[in-house]
Length: 253
Length: 234
Image 1 (cartoon, helix red, strand yellow):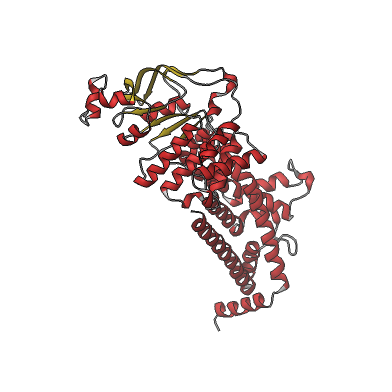
Image 2 (image 1 turned 120 degrees about the vertical axis):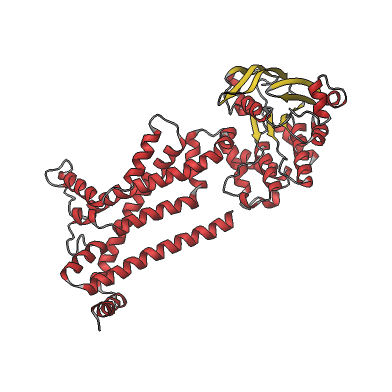
């Protein structure tokens, strides 16, 4: 499998220019009269796994959706480091907490994502086969996607985005509903996607997972970015009082 | 023997003996109903899906309109189609009044709103579930229409069945635009109405049994297909 990673990296079409780093400037989001996110400013570099963490209701999922373009900010902007010609929207993908799989075969689900992005012929078939192998789903290729277990479904969601070779992958608590062994498989796949050259931007409530995977932490609380720190620093000596309380499990409101 | 029992007996004889008149009427009925259904499916599925997926001004009004049209009175539709197709009407030159084509037109008008409205509901519900995921994969609303139609295929069978039920049971519109002409435009429902008023209960009852049998058989078959497919495909 390690050999396949190299093959994947080699066949990546040479991007005209990198869409990273990502700059977020004065980003705010309001819904139903409630301020969900309040003037966020940060910069994400291209070669790391960035984890957005914080208590429930901190605005983590909304932040991912704003960056990915599924939601429009009420103020501020999300700026990719490239002109519109590089089509940043085509170079990113997202895996949701509960993946929505199409009522067709496992293979056809991966195929669909590639069809939508305009892949055809042998290149499409090659990518489908490879992505299913990497996610350990090759034997299930012909099974209907909706009868898979939760763990298999999430691996299929990962295979589906992996086939696209995105420059940036957003993941919204992808293991929140999974048992420990499925969680580990999903984490392994995420690591391999990262190693093949994809920037990871992910939310999680599982601090063990955060410490296993993350390079840097963006700690959100009450719609504000409290601190952006390397993972080692955050868990040993957080810069802020809120960060310290959160790490200790004492941040109650 | 009572009237009912006697009629029942003769009706069974007609069915088992494949009475020529009866077979002719049954086949014409199926031809008209299935043609109208096919047209309504071709128009109603995409139309309903587009209303379910796209956001446009007046969407709520269009939804209410199609829901209301599901209850169109068949005799009124028959009258309107009659006015359009009669010699003096705007489409009178085609000379299709009192032909099976006219009956197909009337039934299509009755069935299209049913399939459109039920499809819109099914697709709008699916859209809520799929929208974020499909948008993330890069699918625009135009791509979502066929995707959601395919993923809603088992639920949509019910919409098609409802349309079939409407078309096969309908008498008011087809009797006005078809004229109930022997060996030309006489279908099961119009024949039942005519023969009953003439007192020829056996043929009426025989046709009634065949009609119910066909409707039950087709519904059973489709629901069985749906059940098996849904179990296999999840």
